[in-house]
Length: 502
Image 1 (cartoon, one colour):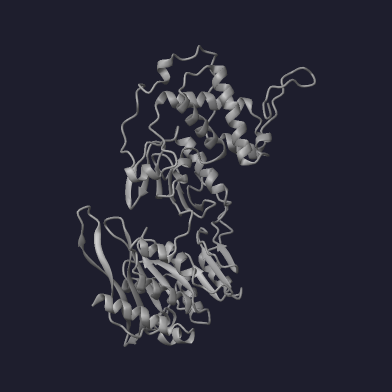
Image 2 (cartoon, helix red, strand yellow):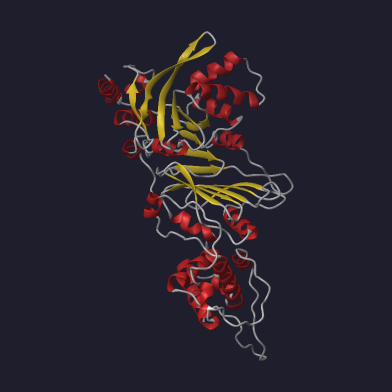
C-alpha cells in the first residue's frame, strides 16, 4: 500500500524512510507512547458504552445540536487508549514524506484505509459508529486541528474557548456552554496551538507564550501557553461565519431597523469618517464588514489589522498586518507603523481593524487630510466614552497637545460614531447612531440620530425593544449626502423612522 513503511530494501533489511521536517509537524498532534509488547486483544466489554465515563458535562443546547454537522459524544478512557495505540501504529506504518505530497482529500482517504487495516489486524472490539469516530478523529489529528474540527465545522458557534486539555466551552446564541470535547493531554493541545499559529508565521512556546493569529477563514485566534497559563494552554477562537453577514441579515436578526439600515448604507456610501464603538463581542468587526459592502468598487482601500480578519469584497483592497518581535526582540511592526506607511500608498479609504493605541492619532490625521470614508473600531461602551478613549489614546502616544487642540482634531476628523452592544440576553444590537457636530467652548457636541429603546423582556428572557428616531431631520452630514446624490434617500429614511416612532 502507498505510504507504508517496512518494505524490503536492496540489502534485504527493512526500510524506514525518515520523516522530513514538514512531516514531523504532523506527528506532534499526539505524542507517541512507549512501545508495548504484543498483547491479547481486549475483551469486548472494554469497548462497550458501559465503560466508566468521565465526569458529566453540560450538554450542548438543542438548537446547537440540531445545527451541528456531527455531534461528538462524551468519550471514555478506553476510547482514548485505543486511539493512542492506533495512532502509534499508524505513525510506524505510514510514510509521512509521501503523505505530505498528497492533496488533503487523498491523504485523508489513505489514512482511513491504513487505520481500518490496523483495527482489523489488532482485532480491536469496536462498534461501527465508534470505528467511524476513531477514523475521523485520527484524520483530524494528523491533517487538521484535532478535537476542534467538529466545532470549527459548526456555523452556529461564535466562540471556542479551551481552558486546558479537559475543558472546552463554546458560545452559541450568545450563551456559553460546556462541551464533552477534550484533548488527550496538554501537550496535544499545545501542539495544535503551534500548528495554528505557524500557518501565519508566528510561534507560541515558553519563550513567547502569548500569540495572536488567525485561521484561514479569518477567524481570530489567541493563545496563551505555560508558564503563563498554569493549567495548560488556553486557546480562544472568535469564529467568523462562512457566509459574510449583510445589513439585510442584521435587520432580520433585529440588530437594526430597516430604516436605520438605510441610514447606515448612506453613511458608508457618502464617505463619512466612521468609528464603530462597542464592548468585547458586541459585533464591531461584523458591522464594519457590513458597512464596507457599500463602498464603491472603484475605490482603493487599505486595511490595517493586528490579525487580518476583515472580509472586504471590493476588487481593489490592500491588506496589511502587524508583526510581533522575533526572538531577539527585533523586527516588530506596530499598527502605527502600518497606518503611517499606508498614507504613502495612495489610499482612498483607510480601515483600521481595531484602534488600541497611538495609531489613533495617525488615523485622525488621515481622516482629516483627504482620506474621507476611513473607518475603525474602538472598545468603548458609549459614543461619549468613545470620544474620551480617543483623547486618552492620543495622550498614550506621547503627544503633548492641549486638550482643546486634540478635541478640535477629533471634531474635524470623525463624522459618525456607531455604537454596538451585546445585551444581557446574548443578543447584539446597534444602540446609537451618533454624529459629531462640533464644539462649544472646550466640549465636543454630538447628536443622536437613532437610539435603541429597550421596552422589557419576554417570557423567555429575551429583551424587547425598538430603534427610534430622535427627530433630527437634517443631520450634519446632509451636505455630504447631497454631494453624492443621496439626500432624498436619507430624508426618506429619517422621515419613515420618525413616523414609525410617532
